Length: 100
Image (cartoon, rainbow, N blue to C red; front, side, top):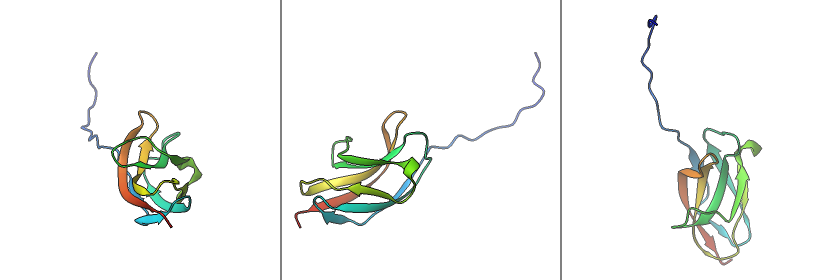
């Protein structure tokens, strides 16, 4: 076997961006603009800070913007872009759920 041709390739890390308001009322909804790889079953979700689990989510196949129902408990949360393949979070922004 002989190599007939070769060409160097560059492998880059997958990334995503999220844009959302910084806060919203408990039980309300938030609209999240996102961009990312949109692989099969990727999703945007909201969950408590310090825990990569989520309370609610929307599949990226539903398009941008995503609309998420906010948790009932006020507190500090994150909106995250999850890759379904390994549930890896590739983007996150802080979000506060307020009591009103």
